[in-house]
Length: 115
Image 1 (cartoon, rainbow, N blue to C red):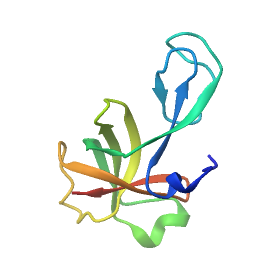
Image 2: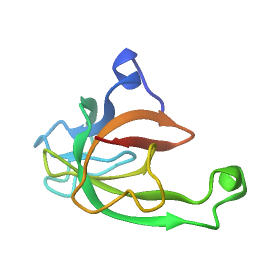
Image 3: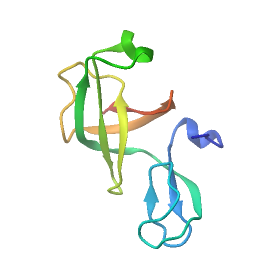
């Protein structure tokens, strides 16, 4: 996904249906709520909590030097669940329910920081 402005440096990019306003994690081609196909890029502060996670010990080759690391899902304050990686975790630091904030979009991944 291509970021389009300076908000992309500090805010999480989402897609919002132009018909009903439902938000999605990109990419999305059809709104499951109303059937529309027109979306607008919107930005979220990216604050939420750890919804689920796993510890990656055998990553893709690109990330082999970074293992082990935590990857999971974040439930944003608006209730949308988005995937991402956690930047400042120790292997045992990430817990379901911990508060997190969006940090950046890098190498195709949303990055969140435990707060």
